Image (cartoon, rainbow, N blue to C red):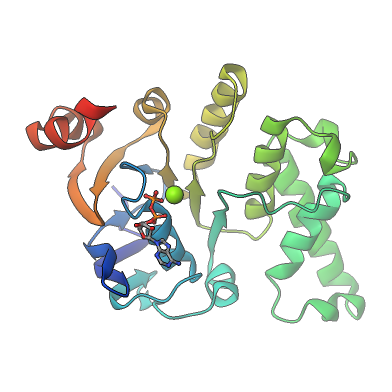
Length: 248
Ligand SMILES: Nc1ncnc2c1ncn2[C@@H]1O[C@H](COP(=O)(O)OP(=O)(O)O)[C@@H](O)[C@H]1O
Ligand SMILES: [Mg+2]
């Protein structure tokens, strides 16, 4: 197995008296899907926010490719190669699929306005946008406005926007939320395809989806890691059965 591209150690986030993420130590590797499950309020989205820089940790470290990125801004973390999709959509509805992806690709550049001065980087951005659209399976709707897409296609567009930033690690917070059966299957196929050359953190409620794609499964409850490891082993662990899965 490859070395972890990202490793958290003792990662903790407090909101006043509430410990939303408590002493979490996890690893993410290219070529694998690391699924995180847990009841509402378990701290899954907060963990994502700590990895993406949307929130600074209270304590602990986030080591990405050998450097501690805890406390960097979302822009800095995106530029290093961590991309996230949001649970609430981040799409500009009046813009086309291509324009949305181009804006996302541009956001990766430290000085977006420089594209007006450099034809080369302008081409790079267009190329990144088109590549992301192709990877996400949206080529046939490239020039449609985002508002005309189905719900499932909009979720694919969020992933395309994430891919346009050139991430090595993808943080996917409930990408199947609100999807029908067919759309879910397409998204699972997309995640499998992206796993080949990315590390993926997948937060998801759909257990069928998790067992279809996860290489590692972590169960969080009350901010803490209850268990983590091989999905089948974690699934049958007595503590996980007792505290979480029995209530599903
Ligand atoms: N910005 C915030 N300020 C205060 N409390 C928060 C904030 N974000 C999340 N929380 C709390 O932290 C806990 C974990 O929330 P969250 O990470 O959203 O859980 P999950 O994604 O697993 O449902 C919850 O009790 C939630 O109310
Ligand atoms: Mg959440």
